[in-house]
Image 1 (spheres, helix red, strand yellow):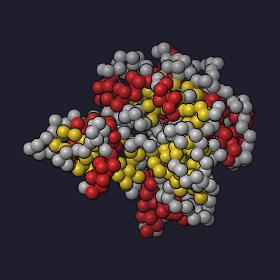
Image 2 (cartoon, rainbow, N blue to C red):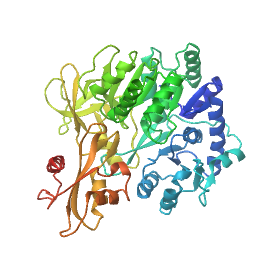
Image 3 (spheres, rainbow, N blue to C red):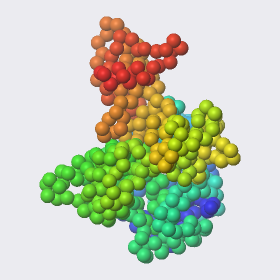
Image 4 (cartoon, rainbow, N blue to C red):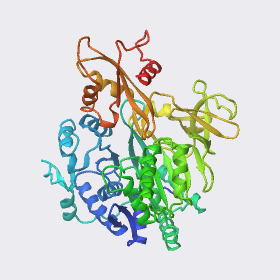
Amino acid sequence: MLDESWATLWEALAAAQPDHVAVVIGDARITWAELDGRAARLATVLDAHGVGHDAKVGQLLYNCPEYLESAYASFKVRASTVNVNYRYKAPEIVHVLSDSGATALVFHSSFADVVDEARRSLPGLRLLLQVDAGDGRPLLDGAVSYENALVEAAPAAPIARSGGDSLLLYTGGTTGLPKGVVWSHRGLFGALAFTGYASIGLAVPETPAEVARVAVELKAAGRGPVNMTAPPLMHGTAMFLAFSTFVLGGTVVLLGNRKFDASELLRLVERERVSQVSIVGDAFARPIVAELERAEAAGSGYDLSSLTRIVSTGATLSSEMKSALMSRAPAALVLDMIGASEGGPFAVAMTMPGQSPTETARFMATPNTVLFDETTWERIPFGSGRPGVLAASGSMPEGYFGDPQKTERTFRTIDGVRYTIPGDYAEIDADGSVRLLGRGSVCINTGGEKVYPEEVEVAARSHESIVDCVAVGLPDERFGQKVALVASRVEGTVLSADDVIAHVKKSIADYKAPRIVVFVDQVYRSPSGKADYRWAREVAQAG
């Protein structure tokens, strides 16, 4: 397997096809020469501030050229990026940056206030690079203008690197707070490139020069992919899609708007002749289909004839939405996957053009899929009728950053084979059909974003009028699940659901706040004090 840094691979691509458009973001077009040149200048800036091998660079940014530039520059100096969800409030930002040990942060000027609040608790931050978001905000005191820094810097020369260099991907997990998943560059290449090259019948290149040669040949033959990701770059899904597209000589297309806009997505698909769109379940599919229906009713439908693949991961894509999309993009196959930041895919549902989709949440096991008994860790045969935890072998992360105990629980070596086992329960039939039963924990998945109940509960209980509460996920047509809260109030107080929701939003991201609040006289708990989530879900559903 190729054992190189992604920066070294990208430098080879930039040298081989400098004028090829690497990225389209809204109306902006970025060639490989531009991407490499600006990243090389930023690498000089990072190096001058002591950011080097194994350092961590936070990215608090909307979709923008600077996101990919700062990732590329970080890899050039052998540092790791740290994705920061731009919906986070100051305490959440502090957690991610302090947990990762980040010494640099690249941020949009729109976030200057929350960065100013967070940095008071982040003494290790040595460099703040502020990207102008066009909002007229002045430079934060102590920050460095991103653009001015690049103008004044000379391009850094390439250095020797390693495939063991790391990328730190923070994901909302089942521990109550985001956890950093550590991918080596070689491991990520193995996870992404094997699938990418195999899907078009090519052997995996073994050197950076071969990667560049294959990319140039694919582009010359008109086979270079044009791939769009609907989620923003702050999500691993989007960043990893960019990586896998680049090495195939393709172009990455990203949304420019700061809120998801289905009409922008469809315009870009039509204008750029996009071949693949990646989404996160019905949360993205429903507004896309609604916009298609609106345009058709107005007599101005979108041309989706270039689409050959629609990929969904992170949340369920319903059969209804698959059918609606495929009827407008008849040449596209739909690939619905059960995956995680920790690896996979664990199961897939592939619908070929002209086929009818299978029932919602029905998947097929991959060659790497295994089902284990969580108590004995014995392998459960397919078709036994016994539920178990899904596992997958193959390329996977090194583990969780700074958490060897959680790493040992999730990445287990069984009978000499290493598996990633995030905790999804399933039953698998003899033919490999997978029925997903849900996460073994009580993690809530809303539109692909993971919300841990304890985080919501802690935020809600900080209100002086809340006695106790339990957060659960309820079914939601668009987002898969929505956050609901069952709470008890101090006797005699007047507290509305809106009051609780507004209070929660003061300390955690808005998407984590409950959309439903049901008040009860007393929150039921077991004799040991543990929350009864089944009871809470029934109460919330009834309310």
